[in-house]
Amino acid sequence: MSESPLAAAELDPEDRKLVTLARSARARNAVPEGAAVRDETGRTYVAGSVDLESLRLTAVQTAVAMAVASGAKSLEAAAVVTVTDTPADSDLAALRDLGGADTPLIVAAPDGTVVTTVSA
Image (cartoon, rainbow, N blue to C red; front, side, top):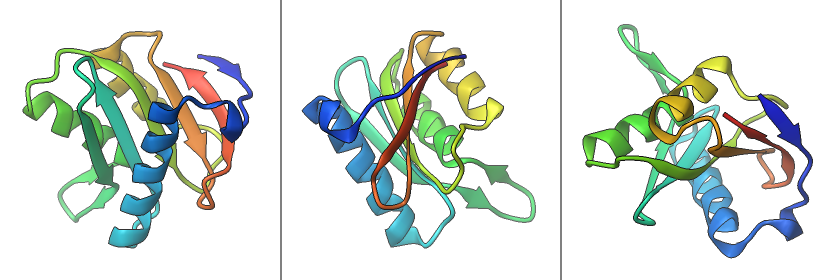
């Protein structure tokens, strides 16, 4: 996992959109995390974390699963809005599975402030 700091103002408009969508998913669904991923065609998939008795998925895992189920072949970028400063290993693994090791994951605080960007 490589890490580099990135201010929100430095994000390109498409990556800012991912953070905005992830933030809204978290708030709308009242879940601990919201995530958004962008596939190779520019389509976005937005999800919150899932916490059922029989199924637990992070928001990133859920968004990646939605992309796969919709036919995405690869990912360009992802964002997660969470209270933690670092992404879960399972999030990075899911991104690597579909997007490869170079897929950037933007980690943002609940207020949308970018905490860090890491490569899967």
